[in-house]
Every structure is written in C-alpha cells, then in structure tokens.
Image (cartoon, rainbow, N blue to C red; front, side, top):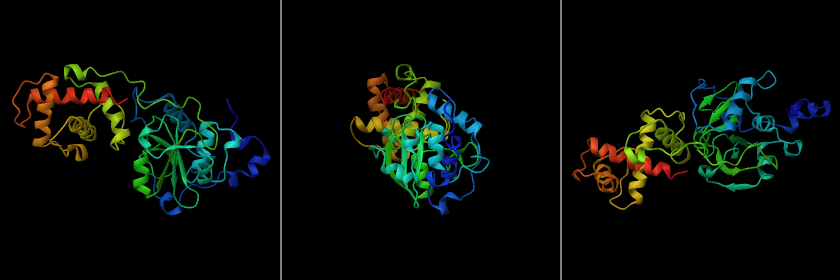
Length: 303
C-alpha cells in the first residue's frame, strides 16, 4: 500500500501546509456539518471507487486528528494515492494544471475530478459513481457526512449550497489519476425487465435513481427503494421520453408533476407498449403499467 504522502519525509512535512492549502472561501466552508448519512447509499450502482472512498472515510474521519474542512486537495492526493508531481498549493492551481474534458457534470466518468471557482483557493472533489451525483470532498457543505467535513455531495448540490462557479471535470488531477477510474455511470447495473412487463422492481428503481443523479439533480441513495424524490425523477424521465416522441409537450419533464397532458401522452405512446384503453388523460391500472414500461424503456437506454 502506498505510503501516506504527508508522512514520507521531514521536508515534506515542513512544506505540507504550503503544498496542500485550504479550499474554498471561509464564509461558505465554515457552516455547521449536516447529519451523517452513513449507510444510506448502497447498491449495485456503486463503483469500487465508491467503496474505497467509504472505507477511506471510515478509517480517516479526521485529518491528522483535526477537521478535513479546507483540505480538499489533501483529500484528493491521499485518497487517490496521487504522485508527488500532482501536488499543487491550491485546488485552483491544480485545476489549471489539469485537462478539463467537459463542463457538463452529467457526462463525468467514475473517478473524475470536479472543479469549482470559490474563494481564492477553489474547490475539488472526486466522482465516485460518475455523472456528478456522488462527489467525494472535504467540506462542511455535504449532502452526506462521513466524518469531520468529509463526505459526499452532488455537483449541483455543492454549487447550489455555496454559490461556487462550476469549472468542469477532468480525469486527471495535475497529471495524477485515481486507479480504476474511467467507467461510465451505472455500468454494473443490468437492464430492467420493467420495459417488457410493466412491473417495477429494485433494478428499475436503481436505474431511475442513477439517471436521476446524472440528469435531474437527484441526491438520494441508489438503493432501489422508491420514495417521493425517486417518484418525481421517474415522472421526469418518463416525460422526457414522451416529449422526445412528439407533442403536445408535457411540463412534467421539468417539474415532475403529472397532469392531463402527461397522462394523455402516456396513453398515446402507450399504444406501442401494449396499452389498449381509452385516450382520455385519466390514469388507471393499464395506464400506470404503460407508464412503467415507457420509463423502463427510457432508463434501459440511458446508460
């Protein structure tokens, strides 16, 4: 196992504070930590890098006996076991030495680094499942705390909470990469049979949650258990598929609220999924089954 970068030599110890300086601005980074979400994000969609991050946080809930707050670059170097050549004084300087692939967080691969412009030092986090939904970072601005200012948030969640400007994602951190990175979001999930039988199940909901993380700002667990947030994402995914197939357009793609146009479109498009009932915009068992089949079709093709 690679030696901890901070404990290699006395010279490195002396320069540690300078080489791995604080991240972000003081105002937003000093907010109180949120309640721990340990144990709530489980399931097939989680990558091996996610599992390593959970193990790392469990073993290192504090940074050298203190808080991780303001040490985002240090976390990336230590967790990612990055080479000394990747170390920069601040996150923003590491960003400038990295190759940005896209400013669309939804396209980020597993193991990518996400970058923000905030304060004088910037901020950085590592994508654990791809798609910008579960980003490992050192800050108090978390959706799930795994220790003292160490845990995860989504790209949209961190940006919204802090007002930081998102700069994009890279696969490298000033030339260093996380081992095993590069996979696509949800790559380990099988296809859902809901597309064919209209019966929702665990895989169906995990795929919905995975797509929701990538495309619709879903920040809950990928556990295959539905709830209000998962249901709202399900409607938005279904509505997007309906809107891609013609008009009239349903606003449920944006707000996740099904209305008469949504149900009429489900019934109309549902003709291609075995629906034989009336086109009246009034949902019933057959309409719900068609809705699930349409959503199953969409999430099977989303990744």
